Image 1: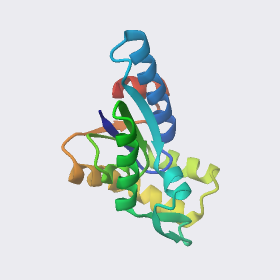
Image 2: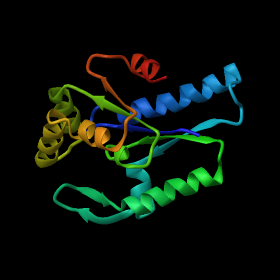
Image 3: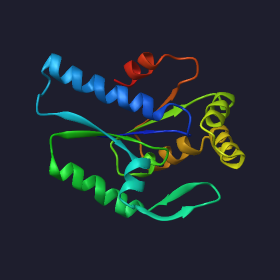
Image 4: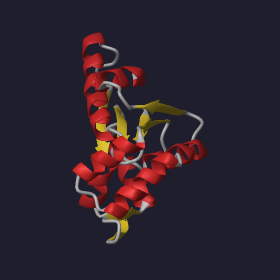
Length: 168
């Protein structure tokens, strides 16, 4: 079983890449019959943290939740234990802080990130913080501190398919 974290600053394409990656890997397993008992499941940290109250508090100023990592790890462990044939792709800008086998850090030009976050109606402080995080390699540094199996991909000016192909 594999636990793969797809991480990066908000706006780099984590969710889009993760969803297509899961779809393609499951298709590969079916067509190549690698192991029909092995499947890939998509986990979006933001959604499960909110839905299952796996947070310490809500940061109203940044309009985000402060993740309770112990509760989140336990939640993911329960998913794994319930189906030992599942590989998981964990999508989230803090997924590199979890107990995973591999980490893919997606990167993108900060100007593009700023535009994407503006389109999502992020407040100015949140946009500024995330653009600065991208410039300072916050997710990459955190990933490198947590694992030896870190892969960095620049998504700027790349097709979704080429990014997923490279990860596979």
